[in-house]
Amino acid sequence: MRQSPLVVVANRLPIDDSMAPDGAFEWRRSPGGLVSALHPLLRHTPAAWVGWAGGTGPAPDLPDVDGVRMHSVPLTGDDLRDHYEGFANSTLWPLYHDSVEQPEHHRRWWEAYQRVNQRFAEAAAAAAEPGGLVWVQDYHLQLVPGLLRQLRPDLRIGFFLHVPFPPPELFMQLPRRAELLGGMLGADLIGFQRAQAAHNFAQLVAKVLGVPATDRSISVGDRVVRIGAFPIAVDTAEVAALAAEPEVAERASRLRRDLGDPDRVILSVDRMDYTKGIEQRLKAYRELLASGDVKVHDTVLIQVAVRSRDRVAQNQILRDRVEHQVGRINGEFGRVGEPAIHYLSQPVDRTELVALYRIADVMAVTPLRDGMNLVAKEYVAARVDDTGALLLSEFAGAAAELEQAYLVNPHDLEGLKQGLLAALRATPDDVATRMRAMREHLRHNDIRAWARSYLSALDVAGSLPGRLTTTG
Ligand code: ADP
Ligand code: G6P
Image (cartoon, rainbow, N blue to C red; front, side, top):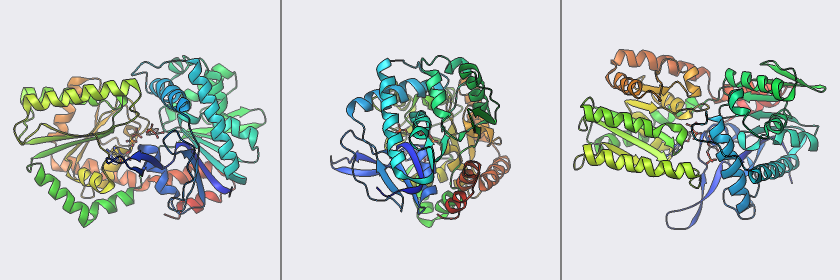
C-alpha cells in the first residue's frame, strides 16, 4: 500500500455507495457536516482518507477522489448494527446531545465498537508514512488514537470531535467511560467545537482517570496531550462564489416563481434527526398559522429533511411523526396549489441547495443540541448581498460565533414563535447590519483558517498546515 504524509480517519469516506432510484448502484457524496467540511479542504493535497464506503460487502477498491487516496474499511452486517447503529448512534450520539433521546447500553455494542476501532486503527497504521500525521475524526472512533499509538508510536496523532462533548453528569453514565477517555488520550491534540467541551473533558479525565488536567493540557506518562476549542467552519469564499453564479441566480428566481412569488420564504435544511428540533419548529409554525400571524398566501416554509440513519428506531419514529405533522398542517392550512409547507426528504445537489439559501428570507436552524451546524454558516456565506435573517438555536455550536443571529431557545415554544416572527418582520436595515457582521466573521474564520489553526497546533514542525491550506 502506498503511504501518505497526512491521513484522515473518519467513519465515513467522502463518497457513499447508494442505490439510485432505478435500483442501480451509484456513488454519492456522503451526508453530513464532517464530509462537507473536510472533503474540500483535502482536495488535491497529498492526503489519504480511511473510512467506510457504506454497505456491508467486502471493502471496495476505490479510485482517488479529487487527488485524495481512498482506503475503505469493511463493515459486516453485525458491525453495522452493533457499532454504527448501536454504540455510535444509539449510545454515544444521544448521550452527547444532552440525552434528548434515551441512550441505550448493550455489552454486544461495546464489543463491536472495540473491534471496529481496532480495524480502523490498523488501516490508518498501514496508510500513514513514517513520521506522518493522522487525524482521527468524531465519536465513532474514540478508541483509535490509543490503539494507533500502540501500533505506530512514530506518528503524530490528532483527534477532533464534531459533536458536543457532554458535561460529567451525563458522560459518567457510560459503563465504559474510562476506556473511552483513555482512547482519546492516545492523541497529541484533542480538538472540540467549543471551550465548554474541552472543560468537560478535562474535568472527566481528572475525575475518572485521576490524571491532573487543565482546559489546555493533560500529562499522560511522559507525553503532554493538548486540548482546545477549534470551531469548524465552511469554505466561505466557495459558497459565496457559488451563490453569485448566474446559474444559481437563475435557479433561485425560478424557484421563487414556482412558489407563487410569496412575500416571505422560510427555509430549514436538516438531516432527519431528533437533535435537529424539526417537530418543535413545525409545531411553532402550525400555531402561527392557526393564530393568523402567518398566512399561507404570503409566507412559504420549505423543509428539507434528508433521510438519515434510517434504521435507528428513534429516527424512524421521528420521520413518521414529521411526515404526519406536515400532512396535517398542509391539510388544515394549505390551499389547492398553495401548500403551507413544501417538504423534501431527498438530498439536493449543491446548486439547488445554494439557490434555496438565496431565496430564503429567513433561515430557521433550531436544533435542540448541535456540535456546530454548518447549514447556518453556509446560509450566511451565501447571502452575498447582506440580506436574509438567520433564526438560530442557542444550543447550536454556531451560536457562540454568530451572535448577531436571531437567537432562540427551541424548547420554549412561545420564544420560538416570537423569534420566527421577529425574523420575518425585521427591517432591511436590521437584517443587513446583522448579516454583514456574521459574514465578516465567516470571511476570517473559514475552513482553511480552521485547518491551519488545528494543524499548526498539532504539527509542531509546521510543514503540513502550509501544504494543506494554500491549495484548493
Ligand atoms: P450534520 O453534520 O449534523 O448533518 P450540519 O448542518 O453541520 O449537520 O451539516 C450538514 C451538511 O449536509 C451541510 O453541509 C449541508 O449543506 C448538507 N446537507 C444537509 N441536508 C442536505 C440535503 N438535503 N441535501 C444535500 N446536502 C444537505
Ligand atoms: C454528523 C456526524 C458525522 C456524520 C454525519 C452524517 O455530522 O458528526 O460524523 O458523518 O453526521 O451521519 P452518518 O451517520 O450518515 O454518517
